[in-house]
Every structure is written in structure tokens, then in C-alpha cells.
Length: 389
Image (cartoon, rainbow, N blue to C red; front, side):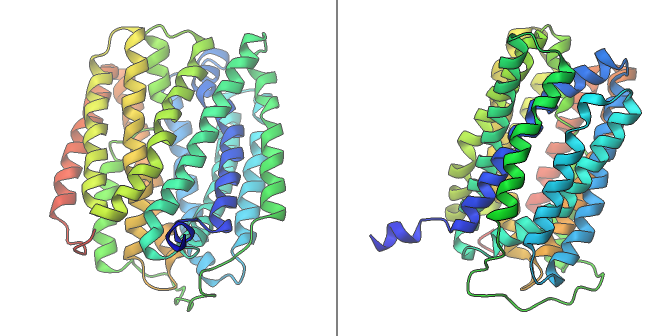
């Protein structure tokens, strides 16, 4: 009985999981249809899509870096979480009225600023709500709830499309789950740390410690090959997957993500983070190579499922490894650096991918991503990490 109690996740982790579920429910009613909205309704091309999504991710990374240092100084991190989710929800509600690609860019940037403000504080709260031995399970659970919302959102969008709704009124419907998100963060999210508040790290602007720095450099290399998943949806559409089926394909993808996240997070607690992450990067390289050579619409369904395993293998363990390498009282700054590196890498990757696609075709773009993932795996094997990593 005592063991079963020890395996229960704290209320703070469960509440943050529910917040992510409803936030992604709202966000993913829009996201799978955004590439079609930008290219078909607003008339932009793949390069513009890469610029919009890359700029949005870069903005989030800068905001996350700043908020990470801020989170380590804040007496109540939950205020950053509330502010971040609130800004994102308000910005997202205006997507239905976007008149041009430039307006979409502005909305996405505001949305991602909200993400940046909340992410480091939220991830630090998760890290300090459980013991280090449960980091993989806690982050795996959180990512699973996040991905479950990413299943519900596209399915709701598919149902609304089947009822005859156009894209703009459908985007307006995404406000409903965003309101639930705001109610949860306003009334349920609290800064509850395991064992009380830790020592505060010196929040001056300083580089991360050496081991964490090496890990972040390898992650940056990997992210240079990981462009926005919006290109996968554009690939599916180009191969003949009908618009009405795109949200369902996106939901199937997130089923694969959410169904594997907790298990692989727990596995990383047992055998170490590095072998699980390496397995995920291998899946990524294989999936991108397969996307390069795919030539039939039906192939998208198994490929999206296989690609979803990459996220299940990496999202929880990558964050758990980072939490283990962070200095005491410095989880906010560590996650700030993590998300900053991710965002800058994704910006570069999305811009490069969009240009390669537009000039040389999708196969070249996908194969470049696969090659960078292989190089990153070799670099990850070479860096110095603790024996249990």
C-alpha cells in the first residue's frame, strides 16, 4: 500500500496536466488547419509558412529564457503560469479574423510569447513537485496530458468540418476550451514545492554549468534538423489527404504521442535518459527519411503514427535529464536555456526547411532533417553525462 501511494503523482502535477490538456485542446483545433489556412485561404507559400512558424518558435524561446531567470527569483511562480496561458488564449481567439499572413505572424508571435512566459515556470514547478527519482514519470505524465489534448482538439475540429463549418468560424470555436484553461490556472495552479521552497539561485545572466552546456549544444544541433510539424501536414495534403481528414490524421499522430509518453518516461527513470533519447532520435531520422520517399496518401497514416513515437521517447526524458543536470534552485534558468536553444534551433530549421522545400522539393528537405538527426545522435554519445543519464 505504501508503494502505491509513493507512485501517486502530487496534485500540482495532475492540475498542470489538466491545464495542458485544455490548452492544447484549444490550440490543436487550429494548428493542423493553419498550414491550409495560410497557403489556401491567405495565398502564401511554404517559405512563408516556415517564416511564420520559425519566428513564433524563436519568440517563445527568447521569452522563455527571460522568464526562466525570472522564475528562479519569483516568490510565486504560478503568477507567471497564469499570465502566460492568459496571453496565449487571448491571442489565439483572434485567429478567426486574421486578414493576411502578416496578421497570422503577429498572432502566432503573441501566442508564443505567452508560451515563453509560462513554460520555464511550469517546468520548474513540475521538477520541484516530485522527487528526482520521479522526474521521468512526472514529465511523461504531463506530456501525455498535453498530447491527449492534442487528440481531442483535432477530433473536435474534424467534427465541426463535417458539420460544414468553414475555417474561420471553426477557429472561433477554439475559444471554449481556452476558457476552461484560464479557469484552471486562475483557481487551481499553486506554487507547491516538495519540501518547501528551495534556496534561490543567483539569477544573474550567466552561462549554464559545463555538463548542462554540453547537453544543450547537442540539443541545438538536433533542433537544426527538426522543423515545424506543419510541414508534415503540408506533405500529407500534397500527397492527397483530404482537408476533412487532416485533423483526424493529426489526432492519430497525437494518440501515438500520448500513448507512449508515460511509459517511456518511466523507462528512462529505470535505465537512464540517454538510451531512451537516442532511440527517439533514431525514430526521428527513420521517419523523416520515409516522409522523403512517400508517394501515396495512405502512407501518411502509418508514418504519422511511427513519427509520434519520437515524441513519446524524447519529450519526458529530455526534460528529466535537464532537471537532473540543473543546479539547486536553478530549475527555472535551466529550462529557460533549454527552451531558448530549442526555439532558436527550430527557427533556423523551419527557415531552412521551407527554402529547401520551395527550391529543391520536399524530399531534399526531409532528408536533410534525417541526416542532422544522425549526426546529433553521434554527438550525444560523445558528451560527458552522469553515469545514470
